[in-house]
Length: 392
Image (cartoon, rainbow, N blue to C red; front, side, top):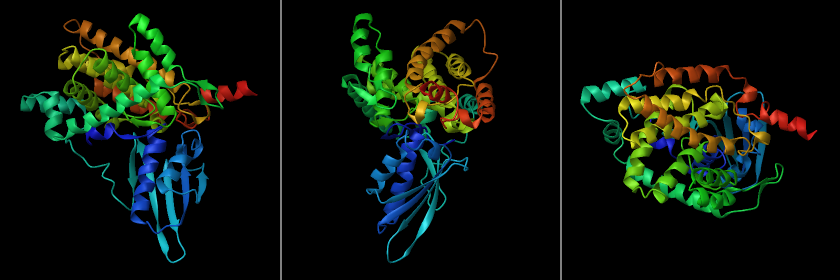
């Protein structure tokens, strides 16, 4: 499997697949060919269908520092491809073929970004458990021994998470004119003070900042970043957890997210929203179960439930914006992660989970492959279609 660090990337919202990955692809091209005066960029798949709503065109212009770009949209291409070619008056500059892989990861055929380097020999949670037993070690030691700089990276990510929530709690006003969506995180936070119930406000603050294109941290994507970000903020500022402890929790979460990334998908354009919100819920559930002192079996059970009850969830953003239903789904998911951790703890020593974590991930992959293309971040079906009907 690849590095856990790759699940936690820093970049601009609103979509890791549609902003972070394209930014990285075209920025690498510009760095290699600084002599370019203008560009031709062809987008395929979900990149083509939702480029405007996901901010893809804007982030590409920022990365290339120019608006002299000829954009072409290939709606017949089912992959999230990005072809880029630069031009000047003196020479022929090579064409690069890039692809957004989900979670901000990218592949360029002509240049190695390092996103697909293997760090772990194990490719499933069952294999990880075998490693732990054979080497008489635990999950944290397993991860930190393979990624010695992981905690340093996660502390930088946590700082971004905290800044995101703080910005989101202080912003008001219209976020998106076509949808007429007004920020509500600040009002939710004021109400939360009365009930001592802050998680929803923190989740909304995160997701509203993401929709506005703020600087974010994937966890494991931007479409689902409100779940772990709100949890980390709550534990830090409401429960006074130290940074090392939070890094440990993100590491535990990352192990399960990595297994899903390897054996299914964390990208809405590939597996539907189950791949994003479902994965994030599993990650948060595992972190909470670990934090509550759960045994390995309990942690796995919590993560399994976190995925299981999002199976089949479609990715159908209204008008292509990461707002409806994305923001609400994040708030629901952070609450559900507490339920999963609680249930797993109650079931401990009473029953074992019939469906293993690996099995539910396989089911997730099967389900994602069966979802229609209209329900995988294309805004061609589901809630997005219903919204279009209502507007007629």
